[in-house]
Length: 490
Ligand SMILES: [Fe+2]
Ligand SMILES: [Fe+2]
Image 1: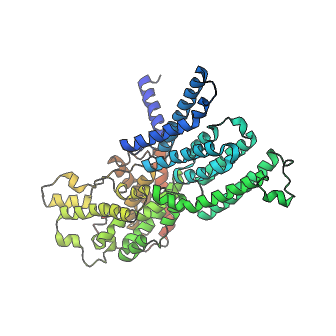
Image 2: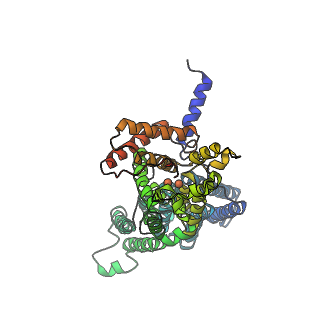
Image 3: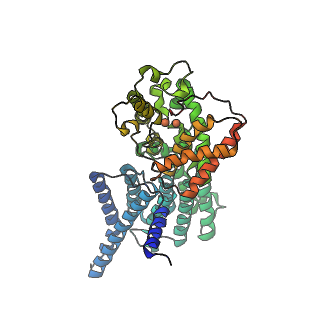
């Protein structure tokens, strides 16, 4: 029989594994917390105060107001919790955006009552939230916005509310997946058309004659004008999404793809000033993309993250082996392992500076320090030992942090394997390549670099397999690069 303690330990392990991502959310300052809390209080007040506006106030009214107030405050808190769970990198500005949108929607409901279709109030914000914060956060937001009405729900057609909920859910699900602005435009046309047809079927067409042109154009033709208004507001929202991206630092799929454009000035600079690093980056993109696809990670995120992971090498391209033409190596000239280690660390520090200057979103900038983690700079550490220098081991380790997500961990593994696979003999067998990959991956694992990434054993196996597949694919068209002793510079 299984020992209860080990059973509990196993249970705890599986519970922890299921809590993806394992990364703890970013700390939010007390001032921001206070502002967010105050907005939630205001939302709760404007969602519940109408209960108190009765001619003769009774205890039961006050009690029902208290319950509604607490209910709205609780769901606001729950919404924030869900958004932080789905996006560990979410910052206070983005949480403010979520609660501010809820506040605006509740205010509009108060001002217009049932005069304005819930479709136009709830669907467009759902598009912004799903694009910037993901589907689950958007669905949570939609359920709160659809269920909490300051006025009695009897004023609103229940079928219309159902159509609104379905449209908002469709927008939330598709909005989290959409990869281009063109698809967004399609969504803003097809959702209103879908809403129009659904209203026509569910709410009834006997009230409005769509054959009568006069009626279509007047505000009496509410079904038509509701959907038309929804289409207009959605189109305006799409126009404003890039502004939301830059003000609130949202990372939409479309923004990720734009950043992955190789004509972006920083990537263009990398290809001209550090062609070797650029080539290394492209190879890593291939390895990392395949591995991420295999484990079901975020492919767009890793593709863009890989492109920018070594931009810091632009500060001194010729100090990195892949950019040297073989004639001279500045590291040999200075002959100081400690200084060389500083130059290697600088490619991370300078990379973060480039990221700030070029306003790269945080999840992309995270790839810069996390792809190196706290790895040992083995080559220079050995040199320092040979020279019998006085040093600490930490002088020859990157400052970290270690990979905090599956994607940054995959990039670290791809970064380590790329140089080794590139240097392999053209006639090497698949088993030899797998052995090399396993050796590098295991060394990272033993060094504790993967412990925060939440990669399971099965996923690590799949990553190794996918690296092997990519290597097999590129082997036949591979140019054999000159192998040097110090090919561990990256
Ligand atoms: Fe690097
Ligand atoms: Fe690299």
